[in-house]
Amino acid sequence: MVMLDTLANALASIKNAEMRGKRETVVMPASKLIANVLRVLQQEGYIEGFEYIDDGRWGKFRVRLLGRINDVGVVKPRTPVSYRELAKMPDHLRKYLASRDIGVLILTTPQGVMTHREALKKRIGGIVIAYVY
Image (cartoon, rainbow, N blue to C red):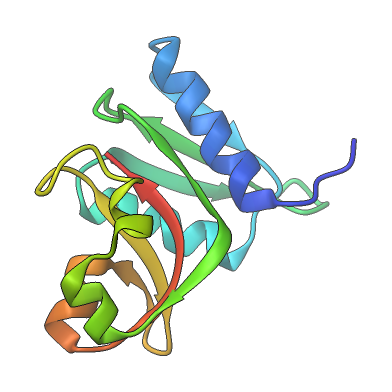
């Protein structure tokens, strides 16, 4: 089994578990980026929580779901955006969200992984890596 994009696999696992009505899912392998994205999802109220499981290899995350996710996925290709572009919300980013105030884009910035709303408050840009609504 070849895993080229572990973040895409993790978010696909969460989406599939949500569609099947599961209460939890296991995401593997674990990474810092996946942990940071899960932390953002938890802060935004899309998941209940997650815990790291050390299995002696790469590690796993057990993610507890709330049933609030309609769609989640990665943005390919990774799109760098400046603060000015983020404030205008160009069409190539708008296509990932359902509506103006529904959902969030997840960015990786010099100050860490955060939502596009946090990046606007801090007046910084970054690279769009995922979306959720």
